[in-house]
Image (cartoon, rainbow, N blue to C red; front, side, top):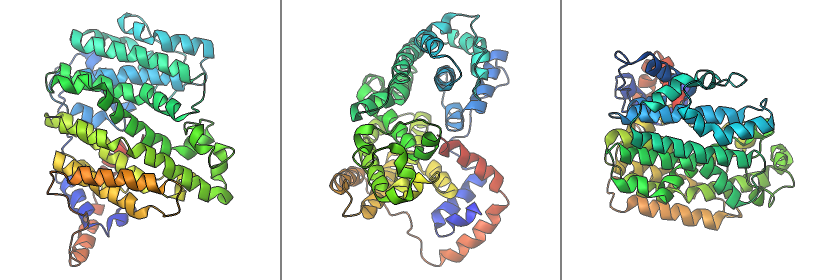
Length: 414
C-alpha cells in the first residue's frame, strides 16, 4: 500500500495530514458561477486534459488565470495534432505551420483526430472565441508562441534528435517556448516585473529542465511506442541502439547514459533559482515552483536507478504532497534543491563516466542553495520517538487516501 512508503519519512506523513486538513497552497480560486458558457467549457477541458497544471492554473490571480488557461488549451490542441500518428504527414505539417492562424477563425474545428484529447480540436471554436476575448497583450503572446512552436514541431516530426544541440532545440520548441510565453504573460499581467518576460534565456531554461526530466523518466514508454527523444550523441557512447538499454546485459552502460543525461539536465538548476528569485506574486511563484521541485525530485529518484529501463520511476505520494506544501518561498525552494542535489551527490558512483561533471554541478547547486539561506536543513531531522507517531498518523490518513492520490496524480504525470 502506497502510504506505507512514507512511514520512514515523518515529514511526509505530516504533510499528508496538513493537506487533508485543507493546507493547500494551490487551491483553485476560479469561480465559474458568472462565466459564459464557452468559458465554462474551457475550464472543463482544462480539467479533463491537464493532470499537471489544472490546479495551479486555476490558483493564479486576476485575469492572468484565464489567459494562462487559454494559452494551455491552445498549445494542448497543437500538441494533439503533433501526437496524432493517424494524420497524414502532409496534412499534419500544414496544420502545425498554420495552426496559429486558426485562432482568428471563428468557424475552424478539426474532427479527424483519434487522440484522447481530441475534444480540444473538435470544439476549437470555443477555445478560439475565448482567445479573441483576451486583452491584446495576451493575444499577441499566445499567437507568437503558437506560431513558433508549430514550426518547431514540424521540423522534428521529420528528423531525429541526434546531437545535444538538437536535444536543446527540440526541448526549446516543445517546452522552452512555453516558459517564454508564460513569462511574457506574467509580465503583461503586471503581476511581475518586465524583466521576467524579457529574459528569455532564463525562461527557456525553466522549460528545458522540465522537458528533459520528462524525457529521461519516460525512456521505456517512449521506446516501446517507437519514439526516441534521448539524443544519439549521448546514448551512442554506451550502446549501438537506444532500445539495447532494455536488455539486462546492458544495464551498466544504460545507467551510465542515464546519469550522463541527468547531469546535463541539472545544469538548468542555477537558472531555475535565478528565475524564481525574481518572482514576486505568490500565485505565480507557486505555479512556477511546484513543477520545478517535482522535476529535481524525479531526477534524484531516477539517478543511477536501473528501474528506469524496466518501468516508470515516480516519487512517493507523500513526498509529492510534502513538496507541494513546501514550495511557497525562495528559502524553501533553495532547501529542496539543496536536499536533492546532495542526494544525487551522495549517490554518484566514483567509476561513473560522468562522475566528475555530476559532482561539479551538484556542488554548484548546493553552494547556490546555501548562499543567503540559513534555513537549509536535511529533510529527516525528527527524533526516533516520532516513528510511532508516524505510524499512528499514517493509519488515520489511510481513510482519506483517495483525495491524497488525486492530488498526487496532478503533479507526477508528465
